Every structure is written in C-alpha cells, then in structure tokens.
Length: 329
Ligand code: HEM
Image (cartoon, rainbow, N blue to C red):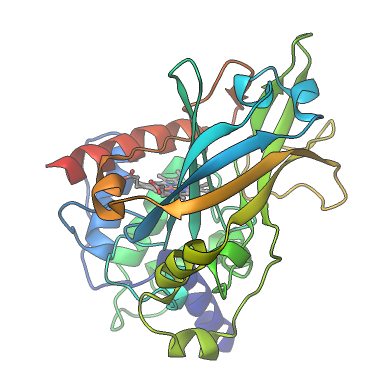
C-alpha cells in the first residue's frame, strides 16, 4: 500500500492532475491520441500548448566551442555567434498551474537557433534525466491509464497497473525537483540524435544543458510556499540585471548503448564534449504573443544532425504539430 502511494505521487510529478474521466478510443494516429489524452487529463485551454503550457520566451546567442565542429558539420557549430530564441516552460497543459507545484516538473528548455542563411534548428530538452516510457504507444496508454484512474477507482487501478508494468515511470519522475531558478536547472535531451562530421563519422549523442550558475533545487515544502509565477518572474528579474548562461554538451554513446530507448540513460561515466555556450540577455518583447507563434520541433535539425532510431522523436514531431494546430485556432 505504502509503495503504491509512493508510485502514485511519483507519477503525479510527471503527468500530474489525474482527473476522473473514462478511457477513450479513437482511430486517429498515436501522436494525435497522445494529444487527446493530454487534453483529457489536463483539460483543453484554448491558445495554449497541450503540454508545457506555461512559459516565458527569452533571447540571446549561442557561441560554439572549438571541439563541436569535430563531432558535427552542422552550421551552428561552424563559427560565430548564432542568435537564439529560448522558451522555458512548466510541465502539464494547465496554464495556471503554480510554478512550484510538483506537477510543474519537468521544466522545459526549448532552443531555436537562427542561422545566417535564414534556416532554423531546434533543441527541445527538459529536466527529466530519462523518459518514463520508451514508445509512443506506451505514452498514449499512460495517459489513458491516468484518465481511467480516479480517486474512487478500485485498487489496483489502471494507473497502478501501468506503473507496476513500467518501473521506468516512477524512476524517471524521481529525477526531477523544482529548481530555485530556471537559470539554475539542468536540462536533458533524453532522445538520442546522430552527429555526423565532415568526414561522415557518425556519433550517437544526447544533449545536456548545464547552467553556469550551478543547479539549485528546492525542497517540495519550500517550492509549495513560492508565489505561483515565481520561476517566470525570477527569470524576468534576473535578465533585467544580468546575463544567464548555460553550457551545451553532447554525451557520447559507446558501442552497445541503446539509442532507441529513452528510458535507459547512458552511464554518467560516458564522455561529454562541450558544444558551446548559450547566453541569454533579455525576455522577448511580448512573451505571450511570441510563445503562441513559436513551434519547437525535436526533429527540426540541420545538415550534420540526424534523428536516431528512437521512436519518440517522430511521435513528438507529429504531436507538437497537432498541438500547434489546435492552439492557433
Ligand atoms: C512521445 C513523447 C512526447 C510527446 C508525445 C510529447 C508531446 C508534447 C506536446 C504535444 C507538446 C506541446 C507542443 C506545442 O504545442 O508546441 C510538448 C511540449 C514540450 N515537450 Fe514534449 N512530448 C514528448 C516527449 C518529450 C521529451 C522526451 C522532452 C524533452 C526531453 C519533451 C520536452 C518538451 C518541451 C520542452 C516542450 C515545450 C516546447 C515549447 O516550449 O514550445 N517532450 N510535448
């Protein structure tokens, strides 16, 4: 019983706000079914993202590190500073969720690089060190299980059954906590991508974004006492007086490390290579308008970076597009 409660608390930290709702069935694509599941569990909030609804848009630049070009021929690593737009976000599709809520974990950091030739490339990371499920079908089924598991449903309910069969769900949620500042959180790519250099050498990597100011997490009690928009407000105030910087790194897979399973982190001992520094200088002039128009896609890549065989990447591309279409209406 006790461990069941822990599991329920753990899953809540990722998917949050389970409501009493019937299971559903439809004949749409799996990514669209996931968005439907998010809308069912978190409600539909016109104009907002189906997940990571609350956010703040910032601006700055990326300066590549000297070793990055050896790993990938992508133009962002070739030379001078690249302007970036970065959106930080709280998890869940509930735009009024307090920043300090455990359900607001994981926090997101989505980066759009604006290249000199007019093209764009995205990196979409979050504060989970690894993902709760390995496949789009499991992610859909997780939301279905939440929707079918109200407080009065007999135990083990659908969510408890799902968690029992997928121990990576509570394990992943145990890797997140509320940061004291979005400038003092680490963000992880979770999905594997393939870096290709000018000689055609292919290296599977996962990105890591580490704050130069260091990571600082709050206790759950301290987080609960913070004002509802403290993280977004703190970033705005901080950027009013100083720059905010992060190191972008690539964790390198070794032969045999899985690239198709985002529930399986590679060992911490794997080599990391500095890709460069992201330095933020301001909040976007009208953040609320800017975030509505922005679409970050994990598959929006440049020549020299390719998706791996991780099945989440394509599902994310499709689901984000569905969510974008709905929030434009
Ligand atoms: C199958 C797996 C996943 C699905 C279906 C999914 C779905 C979604 C959806 C529908 C949105 C809203 C997009 C929009 O309206 O623009 C979203 C946003 C987001 N997701 Fe995911 N997600 C998945 C996995 C991940 C992973 C692995 C990460 C990070 C490692 C992640 C990080 C984010 C972030 C940071 C945002 C906010 C992006 C922004 O600021 O525009 N997601 N996700």
